[in-house]
Length: 70
Image (tube, rainbow, N blue to C red; front, side):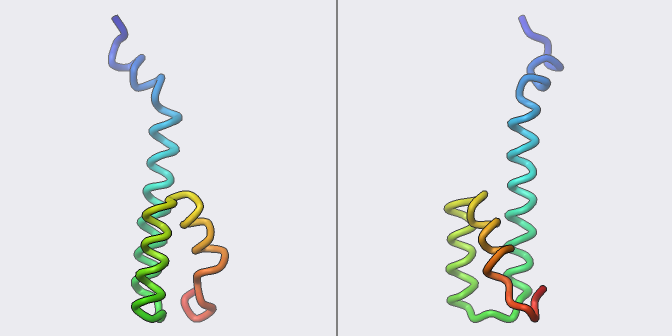
């Protein structure tokens, strides 16, 4: 029988990666909502970030932010 510490140790890389993606998604959505874009622009980016968490946040930070919001 595995101890709790061993179970947590086995899943730590997956959990840490998921936590990092979640934090980046939240940062991107907060940044998006505080920006100056139109409502439709914000809704489309939020849907992209929610449906494709890793790719959506990467694309948002590369292409979605306007120079005024950066």
